[in-house]
Image (cartoon, rainbow, N blue to C red; front, side):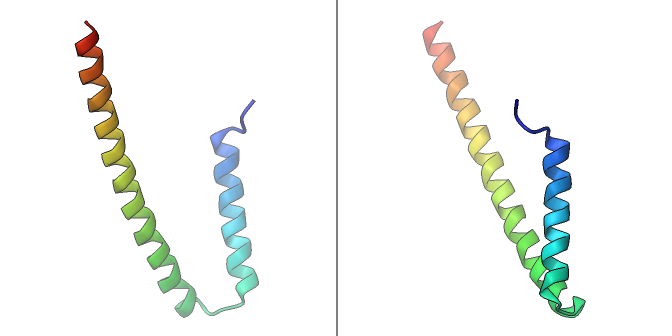
Length: 67
């Protein structure tokens, strides 16, 4: 059985908090780093959505061809 998503989310949050705490940097340094990471995540999320839309559209066309 795969690990439930809720557990993965909780572990991710704990890991991020641990890394931030271990860095021992002031928040004025950490905040822009987190902002950069968030922007990268947002870009990747958009790319994944576009890819999923293209794949779904492609699969619909292929299914229609078979019918």
